[in-house]
Image 1 (cartoon, rainbow, N blue to C red):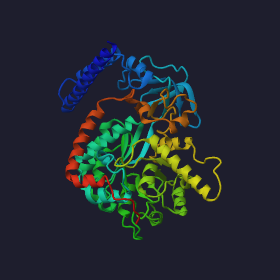
Image 2: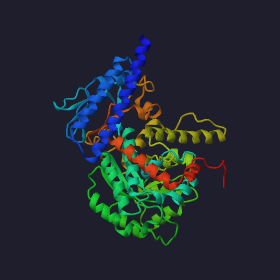
Image 3: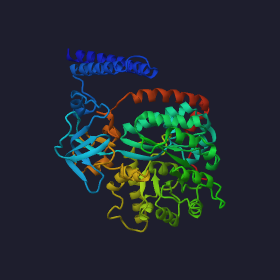
Image 4: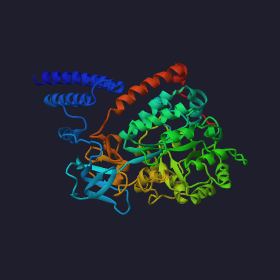
Length: 537
């Protein structure tokens, strides 16, 4: 009898879930089309989800995520109305601020978009929304300083690629197939992924902005996400001097990026500069300086970008402290020193560099020269947009090469050089430093913007909590990201993205993928996923 009841409950739950999923999709479509009352769908969604949870409880079915998730589901969800203060109570707080360190059983009070105070038993405004931080770690929001968001709708297609495969398929064949709506869909999905993974600021290294319509679509997706982002405006298929001065960049800056005090800001992106001593790229660099736009550039990539680029920048007065150099795996020591002396920064994408072959991740060499480091994920055609994975990949690469070199000399590494605290800094404050936002982002410091992430520490992969920094780096996963706040606004809570962002992003991304698949054709779609056997050339 008990077994039959259990089977009945399972079928009933499955039916309700199917109905709820169908309803949510239809409600989201209604919302997107502008039909219906603004508050109605949200109230009905909560009622349906509550009913499904009640049936699960009646049938004796466990809630996914274990006791912590079940307890959270039983609590009323705080109301995160715009402008309302928020307090995280009784959390382990990894501040990222050397003066404040790690605080245990502490509160973080957020008022008006900024961190107001950190401490135990803080007095808070009477109407403050309370987020229970017991069994959780509150950390600074992570910052990804180099991601080609426009490629996210063909996620995973290039898992077997090298950089040569990437150039062959994306650069030489497919890039022109993207429409402005494909850039929008891809960037919106990538931003939803960022928020879900605890990445509160993402640099959209958007290198296929072939016209103003494309640039506007990419910018619109970043604004619509509600998170913090920087549009790195680029077009990698012609030299920068041939597109920067056409007027589109100036127009976009004037119409959408007139202020630096907004969630989404602007910079320029290009694939390095040429090696010609005449320096034909000068007009693009002069434009960037005149319009106060930082530049991020691919640099030090094997068989592609040579040391002469850095020397040209030095000789022409554009080796600037606002420059970000991406990858930098094949530079000479003297060029690293030139970057260090200029105050420039480097973005490391270790998952990318280890798999594609731009050059071995140079974290140790860069640190030896005192260059500030940030981390990035590059592109989801191959890799994850997961900064936990980026931290681990960076540690693995750096420690692995140390061991390899020591063994080659008949020695053993006794104590590791790169530490977990270092890569956590790269993923947070290092990203803020790279974006010129050191004073406003990167740590949980009173007065800084409230870009915060709460990670569950009461899960099977995090219990017992002994060293929160070590465990954030080596044990935490995206699935443990419980709450995400950007500028004091809660975008994810209790493990769920808020505001209907993901259903819309998913629907648009799947339509975009289908369009691109049709344009690419089934033969190339299939061939690209299975390159020929291993070879070197």
